[in-house]
Image 1 (cartoon, helix red, strand yellow):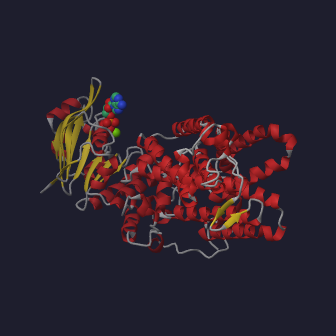
Image 2: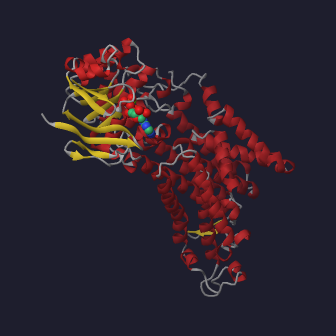
Image 3: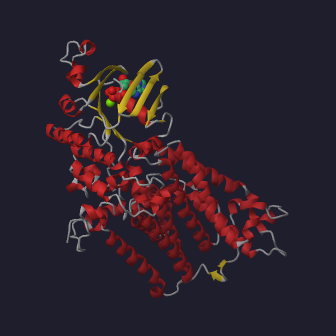
Length: 367
Length: 251
Ligand SMILES: Nc1ncnc2c1ncn2[C@@H]1O[C@H](COP(=O)(O)OP(=O)(O)O)[C@@H](O)[C@H]1O
Ligand SMILES: [Mg+2]
């Protein structure tokens, strides 16, 4: 036994991940094949992915982005286009029906690459990352921070929303795109009402969580937290602060983009609602409630709030946003580290049963 | 002996108000220079101009034979200039260990640091620094939980971990108790010779204990320069501080 709070013990953290994802992976086996529940849980996985991106960017990187929906939405449209073109036939039926109703006589050039599934996947992922990189360079080279970043990302999200809405012939506008068939890759069809969709969603969430955790344990992870604490101090230690912030922002975009791609495989649909301002703000609330400074906390917050929302049932849906807003205010005011912070405090009273890690200056300082 | 830092006619003006006025300075390798002067003399601004935190109106800063005027802050740091701020700045949500870890900059490239899990070198350096500033027992404490004196030492330790050729220390003993100041002057005396330092200080006992040469600034200009007793007896200095008990009262 030793003094370190179990909460901060890396071994305990990895053990929690292993148990959490292990138990979740076995869920379909245990509860049988209820297709609608599995589809619902797969959606929770995507909410977890989005909260993960906010935790990295805001909780650890100190960048309050209200525009995670930009990457999510862009990737969702990319994925929808990919799935739509899997359905179209190059010879007999090359133009999606919504384009025909919008009086297009040829497939728009921007849609051409999506004939190829691999190219479609790469674009769905790559374009949001490229956009976040360029947008990030503009924001962070100018040394914007705090509320300015929040407002800029929000405004940019609004612009993309309008674009998706207005470019009717390309995006089907308000109606959105609903690819008629399920996503196919490597000869396998991912049925959105099956255990497979659940495992795809959980697998992406688990892989992204583990990668992000490793990233945070690297020196890069310590440096971005240092920048969050005091950017000026970090700059005068020789770090190009803007460079680090752009990388964190772009990685957050990548995670949200992957969430958007999985989302469209699950729901077989995309519309401008993916780019709605309210949705992106909600993601930030999930992470804040669960605990933005804990990857696990943020993911838990996303699942917990969505489960609560479906549990309270239809009669409360109208007031749900008021309930959510109230929870958010209470958490921000009394629990700045969210539910994870509460847990951290509670567990500090439990003696750490694990043997002490090596702590001599010699062996540990450069760890 | 070779000059490591040279300021040539460095000027910083706001509208009509000139804060640093055609200021010249030469610092020799291995020297400990004390920069003195009343509040508002332009000492912090001078450090800002050297490190690129503020853009100078005119003039030139030559470091290690290279014109560093106009470089971005992190590029200047990478040339080998470390800096401790007047208002102590450490990473409050990181442990003392992580604070020092971040200061140990083998590479500043984000992608290289993603695959850096710290199993390599640097331990000897960190061990040395931790002992020098006396924070061995505080390694797992959060930066934000340190006492004022400890915060100052941690920041000094961070600058030392960087291992810069030139260290700029802005009021390192501000807010310290007499004992803490004593310990700090011991630290500085051990740094002398190995490092080149410019130290801004108000505490005259401290200055007497550590300084080689003093540069006394007044209204953005050099008022006097030389060893302590020479500066103290300079008639110009006596004139400026007329009615006071000399420069000891400048604080
Ligand atoms: N942004 C600014 N605009 C106008 N005057 C300033 C500004 N920043 C600092 N000053 C003035 O510059 C002078 C020098 O300040 P500073 O370098 O901090 O002095 P010191 O460190 O020697 O006490 C002060 O008189 C201060 O009021
Ligand atoms: Mg000052």
